[in-house]
Length: 230
Image (tube, rainbow, N blue to C red; front, side, top):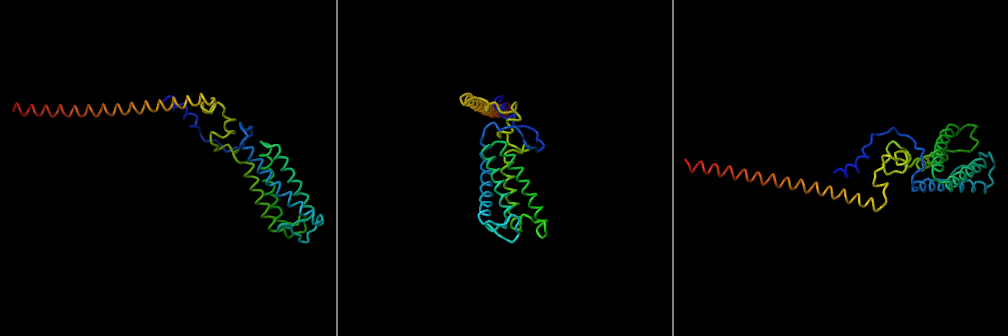
């Protein structure tokens, strides 16, 4: 029981306020998510920008030229290539750099969607946005936020998350700090303790039932003696 309690005890932790963790992960599994998100979004933006530049659209042209169903001009194409290359840099660096870059650019894309939505029918629509561009900006922003904040919001992180482990090294279960042989021995000891407890309970239950039967037999014998004496 003591071993089982030691294994379960660290998991009983009060809920914390949701925050964005800044600690480097213990391992690099999450870094692959950040790299993939940055690379994928960067590829989409660079491809969109290059296709716009190939068409030689005017830098601030608002004549309705489209690429892959999205309105564009030279300025938007160059901006897309620059942001895409920036995401490629984040993909190469990985880790918290890629995560933070994804999240920041995700917020920027969402804000851009709202701003350009307000400028659609005005003379300040220098990036030639149309409604489909606004929707695209929202979608890319949400995807970048998901890729940037995945596994990093600390309010409800599971205790096997590397960010949670980095912030709470003293509360990481002992089994995860041991080598495989030690962890196996600890798990074996825990199972044996549980089996001993179960065996003890069954023994106590059998003893209680035997005592109950013996008490019943004594009562029957006593009644039979009383009837024989009468």
